[in-house]
Length: 225
Length: 197
Image: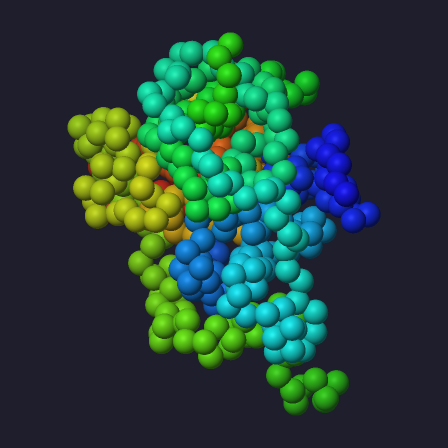
């Protein structure tokens, strides 16, 4: 049995956040940025291997960008937050390899000599019908828009911190495959995208003075205002 | 302990997992020979912020190039031979005395690979991604880039297909420098927007 309320999907007794842990914009409680002015592309060889293996798997299973990103976003939240970037890539590569039948989890754990954490299951149903192809852009630079307020159980590139917020179209970009569709099947829908400008005061009660935040959004994420 | 001195460093769990996946995919014939070395070589020597620095130095010295760069970043960057994955749709944003630009990817780690290389670890970690859209003035100050209150900050969250490059301001007192010398002044951080030159 499954019920969805307040952005949480409750399945088999386990609470799974569908607003993924990866959607970090505006989240509070993090400390200083561990800044370094320069660093090597790969600090250890295994990082380069992990990067290469994700390319190998993505090519072998023909994963779209949306499916690849969602395979990271489905990581268990505590594992995501405590993983380095390339551990997340490794987890994505292994998850896609298992889900597409290239290897089994048992094989991975036997070779690794221990537990091999993978990402959680896809919660969204497959997208069989991508819907009509979006035509001309609905908006132009200068138009006022509001971002839809919704919490999809699958992949999206609409950050939570702008949902329900009003902004101004700053730039119309090209037409691109909608990630929410391509992550969940072979269907594709292409839509115009826009860079939308938000005043920090619209986004945050404690928004800093003199700050604009621009977020790039697909047409169907937006409503006219 | 002599025990430790006589043995190599233990292999970490994540290294064991990488090795396991590598072995299984290799046995299935999915990993082309030399592929891992090729990926490593490409990102260690061919793709990096030196490419972006070349673009910036050209924009500083050639006003017509700068106009093309701001009008169509992808095409102008391609004129200098740079392009490819994560650089197919480039927008260049210009810093001025009144405006400071900074780029972030709150959802993952989108970054303009052809001109800046692979993103640094801090760009991909939660503190930068969570905080830059909420308190950029504070984060920039903490990172050594304090801005006067009257300077407007424009944050660019790379949430769709466009990738951004910041065009930093040319430092004063560099009038006599060659394009190559100017490129040597341009840092990765100035093109992300977390430093000024």
